[in-house]
Amino acid sequence: MADVGRGLTRNAGKQFLRSGSILVVTLAGVLAVAPISAVTAGRVAATAALVSVGSPSGDTPQNVQNEATVAVDAHDPNFLIAGAHDFLDQQPCPHQLAVQTAHCADLNQMSGVSGVYFSFDRGRNWIQPAYTGWSRRGCTSDQLCPGTFGPIGTLPWYYEAGLYTYGFPSLAVGPRPVDGKFSWANGSRVYYATLVRNLAGSDALGGLKGVAVSRLDDPTPSNVVEKSSWMPPVVVTAKQSSTDLADQEQLWVDNAASSPYFGRAYVCFPEFRSNGLPSKQTTPAALMIGTSVDGGSNWSVSQAAAANASGPGPNLWGLTFCSVRTDSRGVVYAFVEAGNNPAFSGLPTRGAEVLLRSFDGGETWTKPQTLFDLTEPCFFIDQLINQCVMDGYTGAREHGAWAKVDIANGAPTGAGATNAIMVSWVDASEGLNQEQAVVAYSLDGAQSWRGPIPVSLLGDRPMYTAPALSPTGDRAYVVYEAETSNWAGTDTSSPRPYHGVFLSAPFGPDGPGAWTTLYDGPSSDLRGTYSGHRLIDERVGDFVGAAATRSYGVGVWDDARNAAVCQPIQNWRSASITAGSSITPAPWPPGDCPSSFGNTDVWAATTG
Image 1 (tube, rainbow, N blue to C red):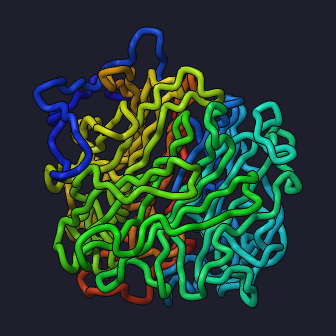
Image 2 (image 1 turned 90 degrees about the vertical axis):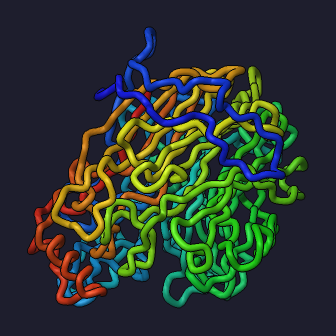
């Protein structure tokens, strides 16, 4: 553990809330900022562990993982499942593709990228199974090869279903149904939601990109390594139009037996119409929420918010990044970011955190309520990739101020539930180089809110964050990943330091107490990273994950401690900035770079 004594100098309780919103109780002038403290008596620092254990240290892009997330089984808290965007099954970077197109992988080439990892000791050790499916990891050609059926380190059964996984994993564990009834006595069911696309020649999916869910019952060290333990994937967006594109899905299962909708599964996602992703000219997306009442075998998808429901006119992209959770009474909460379109609003981009609720198990949803105004950490758009970047041009993209949520719902039984709600996100209201990881919380079912409260360490510029609350609401956790240097502009020669952080605080009727730094990860250099396919920009996104039980918490993030900077890549990135486009020929990493260039991994910190 490093720098546990570092404190905060940022102001708590600053008013970010829009007038006319839900009643708000702010902390300004009421509660002092609780500094990051040393580890308290009776609590130990978190144990760090490598999650993506199947990843090689070299052979890029197979050594690239990002988009880390995690879920715990409330009924068996020893068990954790993690997911990530994993390039293990991709072909070693083809020479022709790299030098001619500045890519190391073609994500349209039918090899899945949704990695899966298991821990049976509360996150101290992890396994990554080897299943079978369509893989290109054995290709050695300088040109793209189609691949072959063989070992894979990602979710199975998608090739057989005419699909391939496209990342953006989301995980949950709930009760297993037997004869249509949910009970923890029946065992546990693991759910893994992922984006999917059609294999060439397949029409399994109607749209360009959809959502599917994989399931596995009663996980044990012996059965999670067996492909046959996984059920065939179910396409949530089976009725999707050919012109629709689903993205950024999030999954949850009602895991408190006290709920009248115990066992019901939910998945939220924005749906972009006419194959349109957010851009300077796009129309807003509709928010869709799928519900399953039978353990994920069948899904009913409804439009919870229309494409124009998020704000005035064309200035907003719509409701995009979402998170969904349930309380002990079965109320469903969907938190969504409504982001501004920079073509109309300018930079930095601004938006709001929005809440929808369902009181009938996902049958109907309330109108969107704006909770918090926010400023996204998007002060610069890199014209080479047309996305927001945090550290400098050709840098790491920042994918919005996405709010993650957790609720103290008393799982697995519902006993001891406080139903406290805590959300966290990255906010840039203090300006460039002053980005903060903040939390806000409600103790009365989202009727009133306290916060936002900054929790990030002094000197950190967080990029992504996630919270977790113990089921009884007595302890809070926050994981985030952050840069520790200021905006570098066009300078690609100076280091761009970065690390992961895991925090905890006691939680009670007055909210969180003093925050403890449980883990402060080693510094790395973002310049040694890339997306796994596109070489021009760095990548350690697009999210992190956290989970908590009654006795411990865990956080996962994308870590670059083993990634080496490649000087030819940096020289080429610099020249591309000057030229205003990605120039060719580009470097070829296997021949021009250290073998560990791009070697990003998923790491976990656990107090279990």
